[in-house]
Length: 117
Image 1: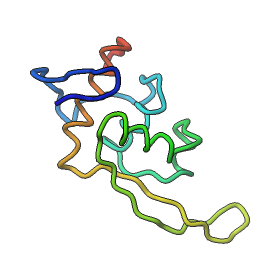
Image 2: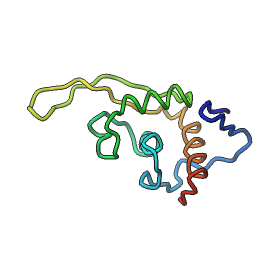
Image 3: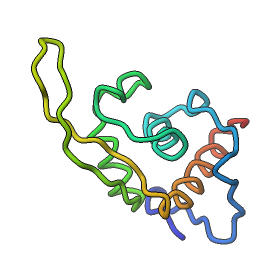
Image 4: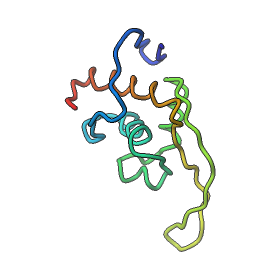
């Protein structure tokens, strides 16, 4: 499997299992933090992403999709906003069958950043 960004080739590398304890706080990029959350914790909408430091989630998702060929699913949902009305936002997640690719990319980023699990 090849990721387009910086032509990082992951063929033949052993990946870690999904239960490996890798903390999102250890990653230095918002792409890695969001991908970690989607892979190990669950789905996100734009307001939830604020708590992990992403102020423009749709842009991060676009990068994950276009630069790394990751399949990120989305659906609109209505959530309450600050003034008490509903706002339509997208909720994003990665399906189980696509998590292996996400884990390999996270491992690559961890190695490049020399992050310890």
